[in-house]
Image 1 (cartoon, rainbow, N blue to C red):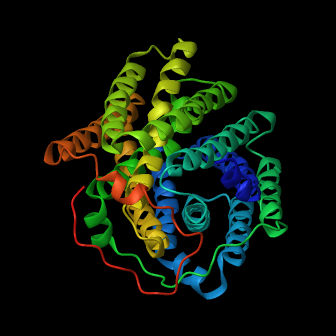
Image 2: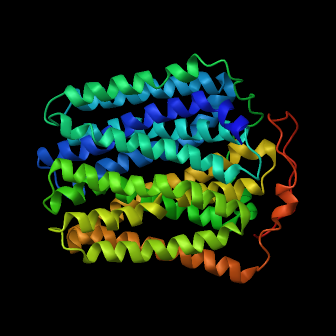
Length: 409
């Protein structure tokens, strides 16, 4: 595992820096939007622009990667992130922000897809969950650091926007200057949702639910913190508590899922999420430390479930399918992030700030319930030895994908 970590070190540093900028952007924009006195529903529409761009990127980015390669596309996407945040500083108008957020969504989804397909070349099924946990920890730690930059400046000025653009620009350096082997060119640039469903129905459904959870909290968590009366610093701590929970739980959840049926871990995570969200909804907003604890518990499951979905699908995929699988998962995830902010925003309009937590609890219930139902359909633990007993090649072949017999998990 140490050798695998060393081979992705520069990629993880780039990921960390990118997510510092992304964490800053994700908290800065809703705080600025509230300062402009835009409504919660307007902010959710802006978030939908981001998710539409995110989903479109899952279709377009594989084509770009096939044409010019992983590293060049990664550099272009980081540049696009920089442009998006600077445009938000130049034009403070919510309709324009819908488009600018769409650019950011396109860029970040493409970056995720490239990073994850790159990682899949460097892992085996025996350490996939653990190494994807390292990746998610880098994402979450970076996001926490970025969010804590917001209280250090004035969101009503352009300074934080410029700082965010600088951080995004720096994220390209580690990967561009690395001597590590770049990913092999991909043989195909397509997504195949039916194939993903045949490989892993639970990853198919779970990717969409994970998107609704992440999209709703990521877009509206800052709004929730402000509407319950928190200061900017307290709001940053609340968001950081969620991310910290995810960062600390990633590795143990990943390691456990490498050793047992991943669906069992999924069902347990869904149940924990329901209880944590309902508990957080019951906490008096005046008791900020109680909210921090509840938010931490929510975070222990809201982000790791994405890694579980990805690992489960890739367990059963052929090496040539990694980009196809990553693209399919991210398309479903992107569709979820479109739905999540809209439904979460509507719940907040109807039930106040707690409506967001009630929505999250319902989504967790669907996730855990579906995992449990899939287990009841087949008690065998995914025939993991069929896939995990063989190491994965370090590069894609040019041969056509071998189509496995359709199989339910």
